[in-house]
Amino acid sequence: MTAQIFALCNQKGGVGKSTTTFHLARAAVLRGQRVLVVDNDPQGNLTSVAAAEPVGEDQAGLADALSARAPETIRDVIVPGVWPGLDVVPTSGVTLGYVRDELVIAGAGPVGLMAALSATIKGAAKVMVVDRHPDRLALAEQIGAIAIDDSKVDPVQAVLDETMGLGADRGCECVGYQAHDPQGNEDPAATLNMLINSVRFTGGIGTVGVFVPQDPGAKGELAKQGKAGTAQMMARLLDEGAGDLDDQAFQTALEERAGELGLEGLLRDLLGDVDDEQLGVLADVDVTGGRLHVHLADGDRKSVV
Figure (cartoon, rainbow, N blue to C red):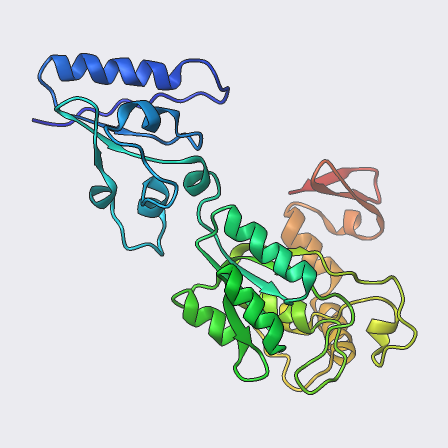
């Protein structure tokens, strides 16, 4: 017999999705059919009434079955329902609501440790903390985080090893502009570059550490202007190696490369049907409504997503 799939969904809460699903399942069971209810609601209300036994927050459920990093499949997480013939794929607010992200935190000071503790409480699958002070790393381990000493190992490789080579889902910068490399040299971009290379391309990075508008005492020109030179990030996005270039040199090289591309060729590629006369004078460029608007010499206005 071919299984029939019913999906009940609505963007608004409190409209009866769980109640309707529960009663449809009951009706099908009474007709002698086997029913599998998949609770895809982070609140887990259906799980609480349809599962025969309470489902703990640390119990594997739908979030684990959906995760590429967890070994469980749908079959592994099924639990018996309240009636014979009913099975449930459970969820809970913690596991599905926060999707068990893997997080890497730069810095194990008070802010970094608070971030690690918060992520653990919220149900993160794995929390990794990068620092080089043994006492701080020991505190991170007490919280339940994985301590990574960047004075002993390459932190990027350590994160990749912990995430099956995929990179963390999220990164959190908790050091700021006074970051130093393991040799004691101040490098405001060190932690950002580490996170950029440790977090997967579709992940996200949050900055809690303080970065100042100006730092006259800094060694690099970009740092003096309050700019974190993320040369490694740009090199990675361009699929080119930054080599031995420092941030300022890399930025200069990047500007030269952009000049080689030429504005006219770029506009032709973006706008397509622009003729030579329109390209003669570029009147203005603005960004509104999430689109790039190019105002051409003849008054025409082209939009590019």
